[in-house]
Length: 247
View 1 (cartoon, rainbow, N blue to C red):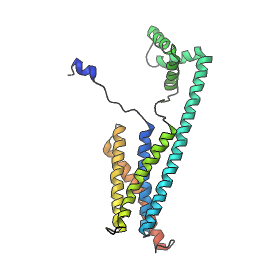
View 2: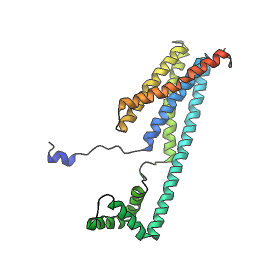
View 3: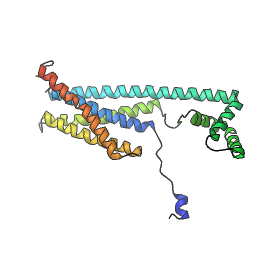
View 4: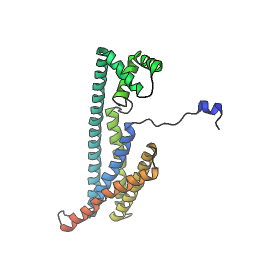
């Protein structure tokens, strides 16, 4: 049983939802599997290591740029929608205060408040226009004002996460140039790296979402890496039928 002192200072841990966590997870995961798909596909066609590295690096930077731009536009659109809703609610509070007060009453009636207690809560909320506005946005419209974030920061996080994930499957091919092992061994190492880091980022995602870290890790590593490895079969077939010159 907890003592009064322990209860007083106990703080229940909570995770503050953030788009940046999503950006890291998706950026890193997409980077790993995009590069793996490229090196596996080109490796399957038995093309020289320099071409593998060049194609993977081009794909990595192109993919990172595309993901960053898409994320910037998506977050910017979210912010614009949010700002539009804020302006609309501000206008309605100014122009139709009685109607907006009734909406606050309905919200808190549905939460079990009534009578003098309901009047006290409603009057307290509408006495501060910032609180009133935030209550309308979160309770009536279901908008979470804390998770949108900055479009520029989101784009940077996505770009960097994609590059970090994307470089990992390429590293073994740089070592091939030293003569320590073959292209096929490099591919096996790239697959192992991708599985490991995809599992870790999936496990972290699972923990943050208060779900099974094992399920999250397996889901991200097996699905993502498995789809990327389709490139190996495609590359092998293209090489076999002679659509590209692999000499």
